[in-house]
Image (cartoon, rainbow, N blue to C red; front, side, top):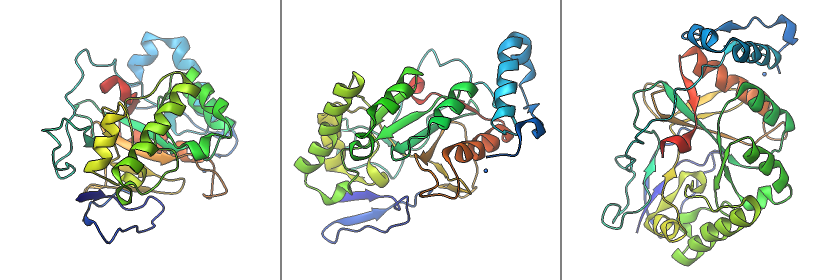
Length: 295
């Protein structure tokens, strides 16, 4: 059985001897006083100011408050016709097309200068992060693992109430290709049940832990009601970025990964992490769009 394996996001190498593994290389701060931060409109921002001066003024104030270099760009309206999502070349499994399995992809087909922010697991529950993203109006998608979120489902309900989407990242975050089909189905369907009970609906989007999966993973996911299995093209940490592609840059439609982490794991907070993320994407002329608007 073929397994598609990404590098562990915490740089732990995992292997299952009985599997033939095809390795795909994964991609793998607070600022000074707010009144000292010079916040200037980014390229393309003037049109937004003219259209909604009060809204823009609020964003300028929020960008200054959170120590950003510039006001984040606003994403375009969602597409009238959503793009067709297929598995990335080399990320397919046997039976991908014939069995209509959920595609694994790292980038959404679009020519617009947008990226998608996704945040994994749920370990850190930073109220400042919720406030920052709300004030800056930045959309993101959370992929949750139950063993890390069950101590405070309310934190993620607040996130959901702000319009952010909560998706499936398994019950216990295991290395899925090392499990049987039934064990994988339990991890995915079990999380579907919890999400429906705690957040009102079972999602149709799932991210395999570590980005590792095989044919059984995608068959189990489909049986649990999953339609898409996005992973990522870049990963942002509090102190650096990591890239999948050789050019080490952003591309239209790229999915960016980060984690719910704080000072226990990083030399900084989620606010610091988001500042690094937003400063780069804005500097490079990208806006952050909502992933589910394109699926």
